[in-house]
Amino acid sequence: MVEAEVLGLTQVQGAGFPTVLLRHENRVLLISIGLPEASAIQLALLEEKPPRPMTHDLICNLLAGLRGVVQSVNIYKIEEQTFFAYLNIEQTDDQGEVEQVLRIDTRPSDGIAIAMRVGCPIFVDESVLDEAGHDAALLQGLFEDASDTDDDDDEYSPDDPEIDFDEDDDDADNEG
Image 1 (cartoon, rainbow, N blue to C red):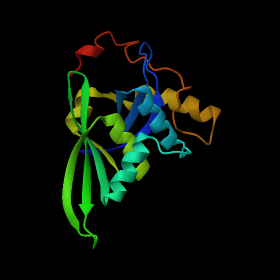
Image 2 (tube, rainbow, N blue to C red):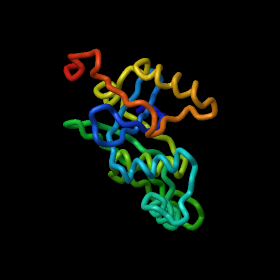
Image 3 (cartoon, rainbow, N blue to C red):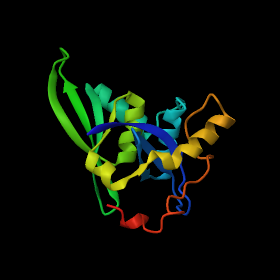
């Protein structure tokens, strides 16, 4: 497993749904997500708190009330274009000693939204990056364009240009 950072959200050209971008070194992983999860991630990226708890805030509040601490989110496999992840949670007793370690199945988008709220790392299995990762150089122009227009904001937003990875690569679906 390698640690990945959340670059932001975008919409891939031709897709009708948001995509979260995760980066580890020179590889970028694009994960298609639903609108509610995209909204939750975007709020966390902007460090905004809604006036009332959203679903991911509720989960974090429940975990805290049960003395559970999310240690990490692990994206561990991809199967038939579906990513799989789990939360690593440590639950402590009244004295703060670890009582049990839980591994809770989650969709990557929910895990990312929770990780961003609690500040824990997001890990991706290297085999997932090998299978579904893209060369970060493909996105370099978008980062430069974004930083030229707003020097204080290096994050993606849904208003950023769309990405089409298949534009110049007719065999993109056949890569190993």
